[in-house]
Length: 554
Ligand SMILES: Nc1nc2c(c(=O)[nH]1)N[C@H]1C(S)=C(S)[C@@H](COP(=O)(O)O)O[C@H]1N2
Ligand SMILES: [Mo]
Image (cartoon, rainbow, N blue to C red; front, side, top):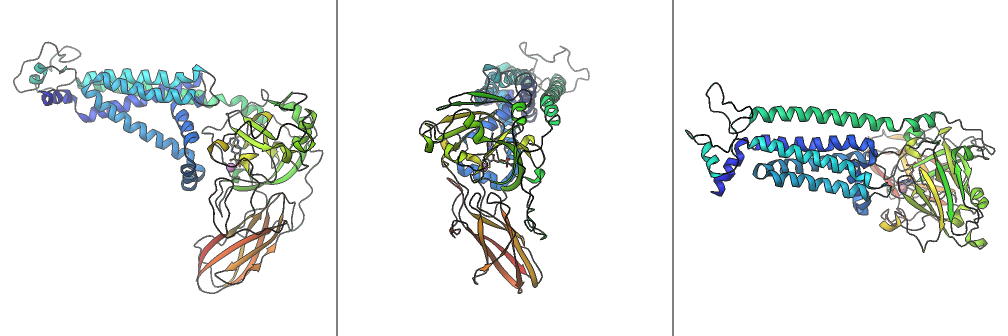
């Protein structure tokens, strides 16, 4: 009985059922995309679930993703989510063959996950954020219910309907032979399901979903147009204090070495934003408030542009950079000296009796980064940067305004898309990364990297130039040494130092003998501390260890 009933439920077959599930899932996402255009692009289910996954991923998983996928980690995540949703949709389609209610309920429950993710985003603006997933899931559930109904149209699940499909059986009065009520004209054995109705409904749903999805995409795409226009309209004034001219010899002409200044398009990008926030500079505000802020202030972008600007070359590094990794870059930044702004607001560093030891920077996407107030106000060139390498900040690097603090890893200093600065204490507040096991304070560790030859390169025997970069921001690089296999350490030639806040290129000519060799580099900073050999993890405060490259000389 039970099995017979199942057979009847399979009247339409598994393939159309699976397709129906997929289609319902597609419709749900497409409708959600359209609704998200009325709310916020980030409230669409894939982005909301993806962002929630990023926030909850354990550090090792995050490290693995960054290692495996690099800057494509976010694309990989989204593709992964879509793949999982596809599997769920197929399963629900098959489930709906047995029970339309169960299938549709499953679709609704999947939508609830999107609702929960969207509402739990730190930048969620309220119940509206739930709407894309909610409306999308309802559309998907309704479509699945309808399509599954067509798959079971002639066999509505009672015993009689089972016999219906048996040769010579008479149509059951409860079942609907065809939606148009007509038996097949040619008298051949019709499928036990409403094939034409299913195909028609499926095609109509696919077309409508694609239309909704494309409309949503295009509306979401237009959303940033105010921001685009505001960025195009920015004219960066000349700095009152420009960066000193680059000393001759600060840049080495070695093929394969990292250029001294990293072009914006090549500058590494590390953040949790699945969609790059596009902020309209004309509507942007920065508020400074909190403990010990005698005069709370709010600044507009115009306010900052009109102030005295300083221009500095500063090397930025990510704490997630593995030894030898790519998450380091050097740019010319223009902006406002943060210490001046804080002093205007009446902020004093702890060493001058100020009650706040932590500056918490908040971005428009809800990220929080904590920086020691003492460091920001100790005289170094901590900036609210407005420009990068002669242009307004690229959106991906924090337009309209970001923080840059020489000597600290990005996660404790480099807030992009900043909108709020709160003075507080390290005891009172843990920021985003600290809550995930990373250090509260994190000065950049001394590091060096071999850029050329590349790993597993096959240079010709004879003269080979080994070269790369070394950094120890705000302390400066004193010495770089290279070793071939287990040979002696030899001092590399250092490019002229720009400032202690920038990296230094280095090179060493090597008489390469045929065979496989390991090249190793280590740097010593101005305080006399040399890089330690032992490789450590990046969490909690940055990787230690020497960079090595294995090459085969031919
Ligand atoms: N709003 C926001 N700012 C952020 C981050 C982020 O995830 N969100 N990541 C930080 C980290 S970990 C680093 S290393 C730097 C990287 O800056 P870049 O992407 O411009 O190189 O930005 C910092 N600022
Ligand atoms: Mo970072």
